Length: 432
Image (cartoon, rainbow, N blue to C red; front, top):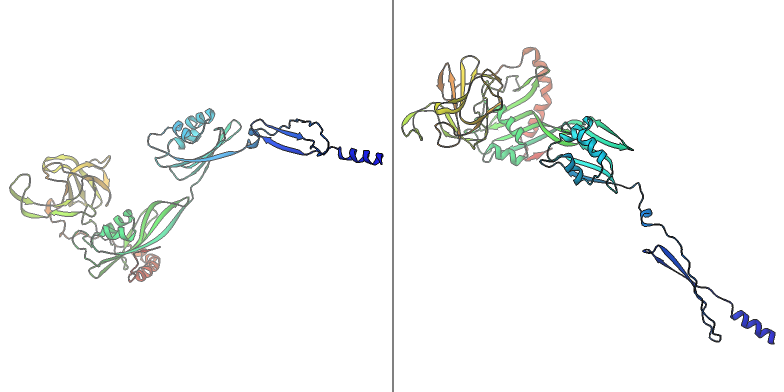
């Protein structure tokens, strides 16, 4: 019996361990506690055991190879150092390469607003940079160990065709804007039909237009407005059509369905979307001289800085200051015609006597120099040295398509005319 009791007591005294783990991140250790529980009958001393277990450091929890991409855009006055600072690049070798090496010259020439992406390590080390240069090429600059490399991938250029149709309610510009036609294409539209339609005086509510035009995309982003391929303008119920056809590798023109040039030798107006403030007359009270005198030209009221275009192919006869004209450009056309553009604020860059200009080229900008009471363009049209009313004078036609190319033109334009016929009755403002 005594022996059984002794065995029972020994069994009850057998140690039972409970381990409680407590992680202490700041100290980087784990402590293990071994506690002998108190028995209800026997009082046994407690003993505490401490053991240190090393945990991974904080640096080891972040992979050393982690990199980060950051985006920014070129701002006015930026230097390479400014860009790198905003992109969190802290790498002297990379800074030197990007500031000085010829292979990275396109970075230093980027225009304002261009986007740049930079890949860096956690501490700002340079890994790579990519951007689209001013020519649309994709540029990738990389660093491997201490070496840099620059890769240039040619721009992916594509032409996309768009269609816009609209109706005149007030002005041509308001209608094209409402239809979503870009300004550059709207300007082309006015040039194409400018010899047949006076967009200052002949527009009526309900006139319609349909335009098929190209846009150039670079790397998937719209880059610039291309050429109008075909267009129709219905003015007071009369329809005018034009299709572009290349007559040579470097030139082309717009032609009506029967192959006649839709372009007159002269545009009716040298300014887009302006109003006539004073017409051609033999007697007008001059607002500056305060007396009656002939006004042998047409005045177009327009804000200072508005572009002024040559109304026909020409040679510059004079560009400078002259009496009441102020800053004036005089152009000679086809021997017996001359046009005059007065009161300009300034001339097109580099314009000089003897220079050849094409119809539609910008030759100057609206101003109020000379005898002018407000900003406007004074425009004259001379035939054999005599002024004629630019709004009424019969304008010579441009040459029709060459007979040897007429069959090719008819074939090339057939689909465009079919599309224009379908668009004529559409009421949709925008159609892609």
